[in-house]
Image (cartoon, rainbow, N blue to C red; front, side, top):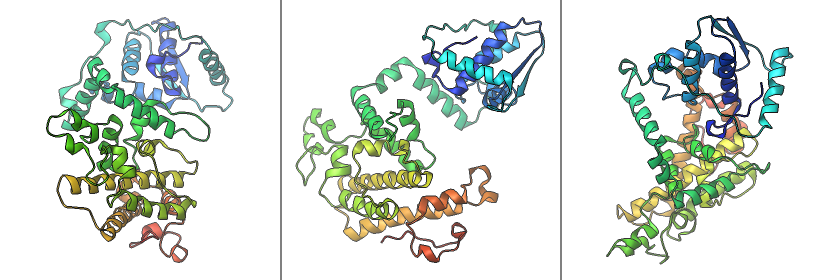
Length: 386
């Protein structure tokens, strides 16, 4: 059997493996024992050891939850045992190799597969258990349900968002000329290498959600708020982050470029689209890519904060030494956090590999040649600009 994964399911290897299990279960009589061999730990674990927890949460907190819920319900209708065995992929196992060939065949088929979603309500366990809820889980579930509603999707598909998203996708297109899907751009705004305080800033930036520039044109007696007091033009996010001549953006990108030249020999003068796509941009080397994400997002967010302090809090323009010192403090704090996060005993699964931290900051540290090989374990390491 070879089928093409429907576009509405979001084709991926994981979805393909899970859909294949569903189809196999449906193809075998319910009174016949069934043993499924798969190289997908994701699918097997989701239908075995993770199943009860995900069921208690209504499958709302897991990716591909609807497909997991449907597959589990179909398995529940079986009278005979259903067992799973994991096999190593691409290791010469005949059945697994044949499955890969069928998957390739299915990918070339037209998208006309109609998935059977009919299942008895008696084997479905709708909703989430109250006993399994925490405030954080409930918030995530409610937010997910809200985001899946058509009205919300229409709101998020407004013109400004569509344009910004398209520009961000183009900016994130790598040397392979592959343009990332919109989902990757959205997911990148929550990338683990981006500070939590900056994630909302990037999300709002793509949605053009900040009340700046043209926003004030339609509000009587407030149109002057949309103009930059020094440059005399609309104070758009592009103007704030990359153009404005008030002390802030130029000075921040100057010092960011100093550090980026230490790493790559190049300046860092991004467009707004490149800032939006900062978390999705891949530069080949993991360390270089990671430092890029850190520098471009932290720098853009500092420029935004400097603008708000000047315009909203009426503090006036920051001095050049203040701007430089604040940038250095932010980046040195990120460096110190990276060093601390290499402590596997304290942070366990969330710990960073020392090799990744060293690759990230290579060629950017003060007195780097004199540092010990395990310098992330030491205190007081600083970046080499300032």
